[in-house]
Image (cartoon, rainbow, N blue to C red; front, side, top):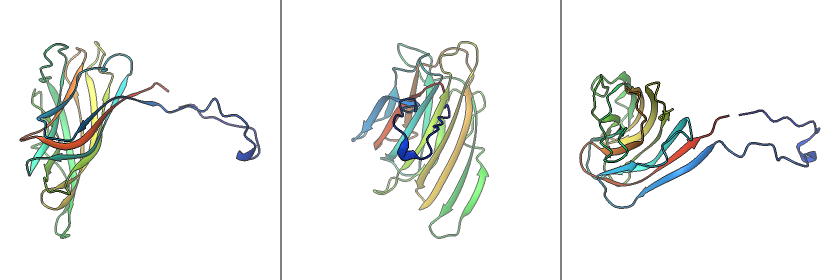
Length: 204
């Protein structure tokens, strides 16, 4: 983003601000979940218009207790088969309400090595009335037909064991085909409620 500098001695003397950037994220799609769905997919607007796409998760609440929130991608524009080969890494922090567990560790069971499986984004989300997760995922240059497709994510959630969880995920879709769709779901049962928004990030 360009730095805007004014020569006025005080902000009260500024008479025009037309050159200030109006914001670099453009909202493209919103999936609002108010009753149980097996998954939440984004099958349009992922194209060469933007080099980076940002997905924001707000209060994603599962129907089933102690499960995983996860995602996958598709390079199929018709049937949207979510089965792209990927290699990933994940580490997480946890601290429970009883102050008896406080840890930061690499999660060997949550990473993938050349797998078409869904990638876990959060482990052990609870389904209590006040339990949910929020966070974001960034997908870089999904329309490239030269490079593999990187992604990173960070998720905060209320774990089933009455603990705060903080997950860090990174990896790549090991394909030079364009990624055209993403799908988010729970490892078991429905997504009961929540909001997922997709933004395009403008070049600075």
